[in-house]
Image (cartoon, rainbow, N blue to C red; front, side):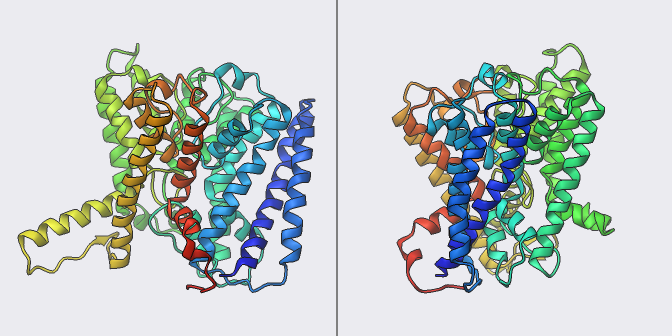
Length: 487
């Protein structure tokens, strides 16, 4: 295993975090806040860790294989979170380090689960509010993908890092060179970010809040600046944020195809059609189910669409306390927590493409049982899916269900005061990177009441969900640390 390359990459990531932390530090200075010192100290700590790792392992074999890719991603995300939590702790605005780590992991993994009350959020300094939401934007596309986009790499195997960090059952190159792929993805990401900021400014939102909410939307995270999330903003602003949540939940390859003129191919994507179909159907059913709850049809439609879009894209913004809606609507939203967005987007969950494949795998098995001599293959987007991918999707689903059950049981042991629906939705909300759940952990509540053991479980749930389980499983296997290199 190329341990030296792992250390060097982790060092580069730490230095990048130090550089990015300059932005919220400047925000703090602009608003005349003392928390700029917290950022300055944290930047010094990050540089002290990252610079030696980068310099000591500067001239090493740059080959990255699947094993190294998984381990690099796991270590990088853990270290990013541990360092990123320091400004909250040093400023005293989140005096408990575990709570600060919980909030930071929630930010980087684009979960949006919080231990802060509405009053604490509204009373937080601008610099820390900015950093809190900026972690969504950094983690949304993937910080190692950003490294590949801006730092030249001699490795021909960098695709293993992208596959380990980008969500979805398959990640490939949209152009021959992996660095150019990373650049294109980030250019699309930045372009859509700028467009949303402009549209929010046009609707009367100030620059600071426009940036913060765009970071939350782009990363499908959900951190904001108000106790009621998005509820007190105008209908125009709610529609803008709602539409952009749905857009950021689409596979970024679709946007690339549209840019290069392959519009017909883009809109024939089965995953895109299923994704849009699920959103429209869920919105319609919920709209009918909550009819009469709101004064006008327009408000009912907007609220239904916003919450469906927020949950399926795993953003977690709210315009209403959906925990008070009828049972049918809450069950639909709970189901959407598991569906998630498209592969290759910034959203979490199981992913629409993976669910389509699971459906086709089951359908093929039923056909084979009825007609043993028939030859059936799983096809997706017009192409035959390799058996390796079929096995991977099946294994991932089994592992997902097993880990989910284990985490629910652990929360029941550590926090037995909560009802089963609340504990179930808490794991669903964190494992699928959504944020608010139902019941005791619904949109009007937070996760502060949990014991430290439950918070640790949910921290790992957020990391496992964002990195899709395998990087951490590989990192924890004893055989991973053998000297044998696997391609």
